[in-house]
Length: 129
Image (cartoon, rainbow, N blue to C red; front, top):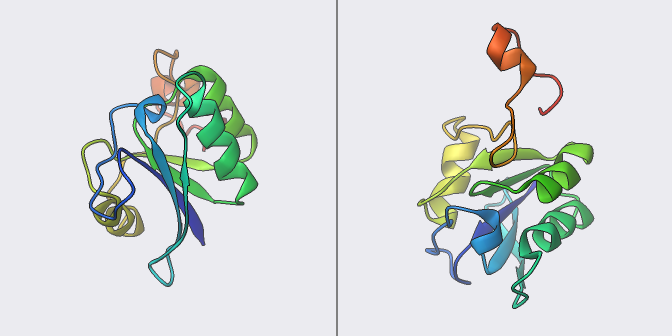
C-alpha cells in the first residue's frame, strides 16, 4: 500500500505541519516495506495543497498523512477515495507507524467545513471515508 506524507523538510525526521498548504515535501511511502519510494518537493507558494493532493492521487496512494486541508484539495482527495489522516506535529516515520496501528484520527472534512452529517447524528460518515 502506498501512502503520501506531507512534511516540512525532506528527511524522515521531518515534521508534518499544521496545514497541508504549509508542507514543502510529499513523501510517497510503501508501508509494507517501510520504504520511501519518492520525495516530491514544491516551491510554489499558491495552491501547494492542491498540487500535493493531485500528486497523491497521481501516485495512486490509498492515504495521505498531513495537517488540515483546504476545501479544494480535500475534494480532490475525497473524490479519489484517498483516506486522510491528521498527523500534525509528528515525524514522517512515526506517522506511518501510528497510521498502521490505527492511532491517527481521520480528517473527515476540510478546514472550516460543516463536518459530516453522520457525525452529528451519531451514524457513520460514508461521504468522506
